[in-house]
Amino acid sequence: PRLVLTPLQDTDLPEMCELILDGIHDPAVMPFVRLWTDGAPADVVANALKSYWSSRASSTPDNWSVQFTVRRQGVLVGLQVLRGKDFAVTRTVGTGSWLGRLHQGQGIGTEMRSAVLQFAFDHLQAERADSAAFSDNPTSLAVSRKLGYRADGTAVVQRRPGERAVEQRLTLDRASFVRPGWMVQVRGLPACQAFFGT
Image (tube, rainbow, N blue to C red; front, side):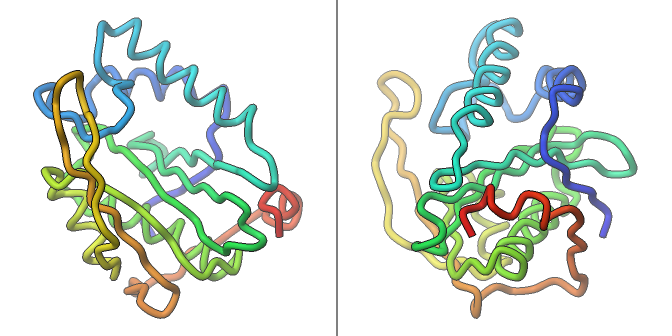
């Protein structure tokens, strides 16, 4: 109930880049598989912009991704991604997210994930939601536990060059979703329903 999520627009990008440059995570720790936050500020901004534009340009009804800006009292605090591949058949979505460091530790991560899960289960008729986090990312794993996800295996990946990391995969079905005491409100879906392959 504290947040408003809307699809990322180009007009959001200057504010988004400022939030990214203010910091998302401790530079000594890498929570992402893709190292887009490593490097000089100009490189980090370029990586972010390429990722956002590429994701938008490559989305189709068979393989879509929506990047939602997350705002609290009008202030941009992070990004929540919802994606689906062959969704009309699989009825499975995936999620990913990040928050600016100044906005962490306030329950926002749980609230924004809960919002997109309600959207997926109740409005898109998803049956399953998948996520993942590195085993040394207790904050992300705690959000998943709160919402009812269960462990779904692990993968060993190279995180930074020469650095081995264990990725914990997680899954959640509609019946196991631990719902909050509020309901998400959705506007504008009929106009873009076909985008989701439904």
